[in-house]
Image 1 (tube, rainbow, N blue to C red):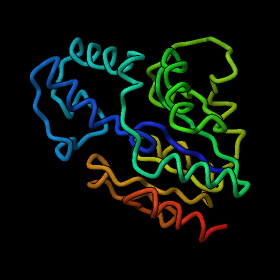
Image 2 (image 1 turned 180 degrees about the vertical axis):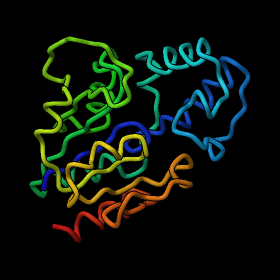
Image 3 (image 1 turned 180 degrees about the horizontal axis):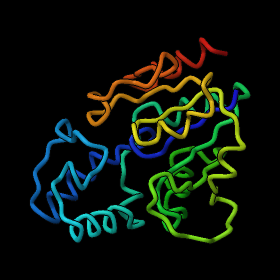
Image 4 (image 1 turned 90 degrees about the horizontal axis):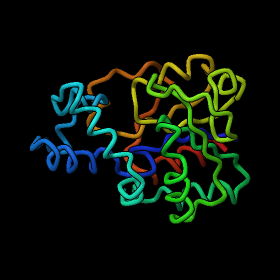
Length: 201
């Protein structure tokens, strides 16, 4: 099978790190379970300037490298590769964060995984033609059997694949959203996700 995997809050605990960053930079004390919106600007009640500072700080290489792995992520993805599945990490992180993001994967035992930056949220204006930069046209040419994603804003990128199973990683910011269809399945951890993939294989 061909499997799409999102990076932040699927492979690593990005939002948990941002709660600490928002507190450090602006004194915004928002517990992780109170991060109710995918938009961190909205969740932390930031103005435009503060949000820009938050994102700049959170994407510094040394900060990205410190993000904690979501338990079971690397083990599961490596098992999928061993079973012959084709795994793509498709992230909405800015293109400038690629090197640190790639190094994080390598240091967490995921050297075999393909990673691509896709402008999911209109944040990037990069015209770099690097192999790791995926255009929307290139993305829509790919067909996936399964996706692992946490962001409700990314679900629209699956509309062209109505038969694909979308395993929604349960997070505080997606719990209030009604899932788009029966092919969307909420999963609480990587063990559950792995069981779902095994059942589809």
